[in-house]
Length: 104
Image (cartoon, rainbow, N blue to C red):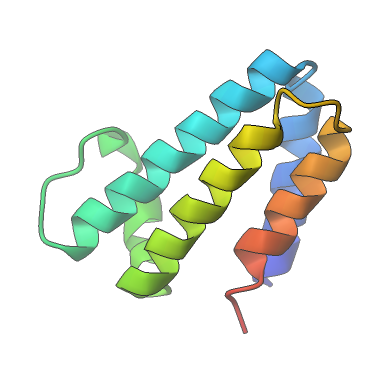
C-alpha cells in the first residue's frame, strides 16, 4: 500500500517538476517535511508544515527516529545529484526506492 502511495506521488510530482531547479526545491521541501516528522517524534512543535499535522502524525507513527533521520540523509544525498547530468525520472525513481525501502 505504501509503495503505491509513492508511485501516485511520483506521477503527480513529475507532472510538476520539469527542471533541475524544481527537483532541488522539491527535495528541500521533502526534507522540511521529514524535519517536522522528527520534531513531532521528539515532542517539539511543527516548524514547517503545520497544516499537514495529520499526515505528519501518520508518517511519525509508522517510522522510528532512526528511520526518519535515515530518510533525511538519503534525500540529502540525492539532492547532491540534482544538478549533475542525471535523468530526473531516474532520480525520482531512486528517491522512491530509497524511501520505501524502510517499509515492510
